[in-house]
Image (cartoon, rainbow, N blue to C red):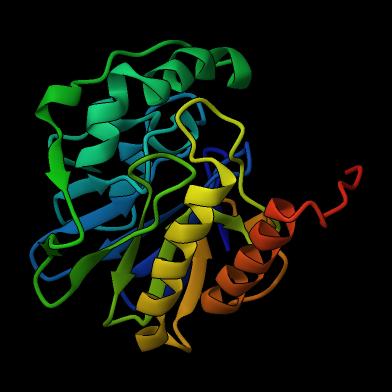
Length: 239
């Protein structure tokens, strides 16, 4: 593992890097034959592109698992930015409120984002990097347009904060689903993930994780927790 300007980088496969910033945010760089794709950006101050360009000489696009500042702070550095159409639509709602409050939470400067220029994605979208294709799996709840990115070549699932990092998901933020809607979304996600048992789980804050690499088992646990909360059986615990 290398440390570059505060970033820790780890090559976890050929053409695949995991990168963690100083604030515990994880992002992932996937390299294809024609271009590379960064999944999320973290929220560390300074420019991120110079660090990424030390890892790959391919042009780099950005795909966002969801529209929260700790995952898209550096989106202004990229020409092509992919974001689910639901989060683009929610920019003037709960998602936008989170983005306004985010800089104060993370003590970083405010930025302007060209949200109208973002490339809207759905679960039909395929991002072709040349020899590597990134697919989109809906995972709504943490935000209205949260997604999981699927890389079949490297057999990984880039999960953002859809189910947290295995230890819980934040649903108290503006724009998040309520427990009932989230539970329904998780059920759909669990069925989709049947096809990808054994794929590596790469979350948005991997150092906060539980150590589990089986995303579907985490989703099942979250469904059980949601059911117990809806029935009033889940007891809150202090951190």
